[in-house]
Image (cartoon, rainbow, N blue to C red; front, side, top):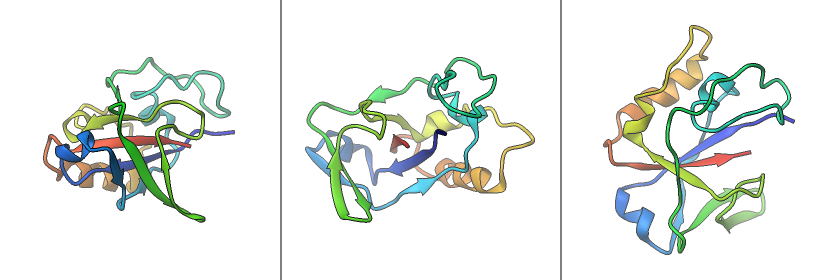
Length: 130
């Protein structure tokens, strides 16, 4: 089993404090544990995780009243937890600027990071781990 990351950028920071937010924008990273490990402790629980460092980017749990809507095969589903049963977390677009990339970072991941860099710095981005 491997770890995957889908980011759900919100339209503005006010949505973070509503009771529900449908996440129309959903962008999935190529699997890159050097990036993922900067947000979470990948640990040995994931196959192919390899040697990783401890997280360097602080994430926050979504506010207690917020439900996140994502579009899945069965339609719109609402949740507060990821596929591992952990509460959803978020960071602000500004925090992505602190990511350390390697020369092996895929073009797709670089493009996702360029998109995030173009967002206002206070844009919340929900991290959906799969």
